[in-house]
Length: 182
Image (tube, rainbow, N blue to C red; front, side, top):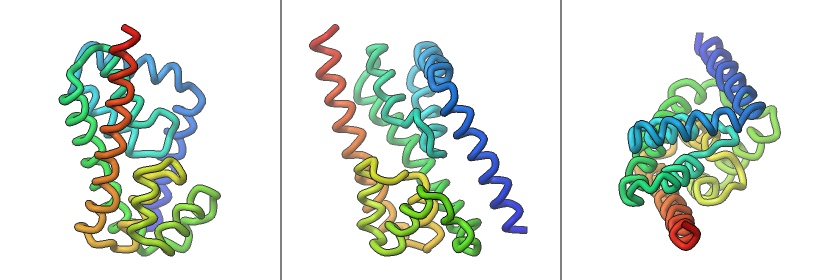
């Protein structure tokens, strides 16, 4: 039963990754329209969705689009952070409940092998690197952190806290760039 749920989840995720990868401009325009219309709520929703799966339009892009529409940098930061943290906890929980029993079947693709190795060998430090740098997909690392039953406190400190720093630095950089250009 758990293997069946895992296969269905992976099929859905793979389908979404393929669809978004084939037409990122289309989905980028949908994100722009919704941020223009709904503001911070759209930033939260699209940050959540873009960090739920590994795909080309990441949560930082969503936050930058909010800056383009001259929304408050503080509220953009808070909205994107809430979205990222919420989905990180969901992915951690999915990994803990669904993947922990099927972990040996998971690491067949190159991305999964890198993520599996990073979290399995280096644990919290591997999660920190995936959250702070685009070396391996953070989403997959959150699944493996849950699957390997990393303590929630360590998950927060090594996975979610670096996202605060990364998002803050990216937002601040683009805020300064947009203020000089516009």
